[in-house]
Length: 266
Image (tube, rainbow, N blue to C red; front, side):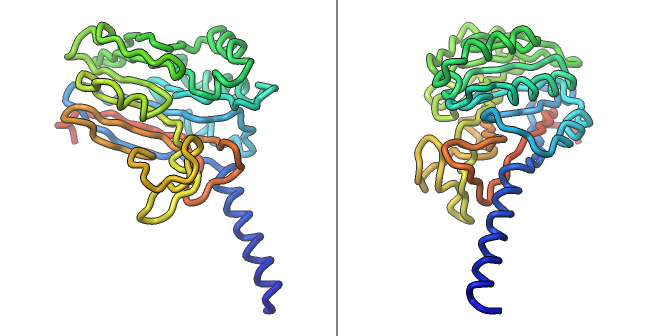
């Protein structure tokens, strides 16, 4: 094999790999434990969809099989450059078939797109709860959950949104950095996105390219599970889409299935 043929094979292999990383999302499973929870709670966490066309739609079957109690969307459902929101609308209609308990907070791309209000109107008409600086209580099994949404453009976390410290309090917010600016001592679980987990990751270094910070090898909170203080768990999802460049490396697009269990359960 001569050098030119080898080079072409390498380029084609890399392009195929990146195509898979971007266009064939995986379902990531995470189990989290808390003392306050009586029964298991299943949460489908979706972030950074960026109005992406899903080429392989069999992922909806996997999500439906999970039977989540609620779905949270932590921003950037559309991209700042999106003119036609059809893909995002179709995506919402599909996940709406899975459960009616869907909660949304806006990310930076919503506010950078002139059709932000059109998106919000569509979500409201399709039964999605908009929690931009609002909170809502729901009951799943024997567990009372307080979902606190924080807006990206004007982030506000009002202490009075914690109605009862004994109930399970979830904060949904687009940017983990903005979440960390708040006192999270009464928040049990923070769900966020924004970082894309680093569209490029390397072993031992983690994220080296993130959409908001560019080349950055010092990002501590980029993807996965982090314990904040004594009581709070922060979970950052790497998301379904991409921003600026169609690139993902060692960080396949994903949707997260989170199972919340009681600390003492087996």
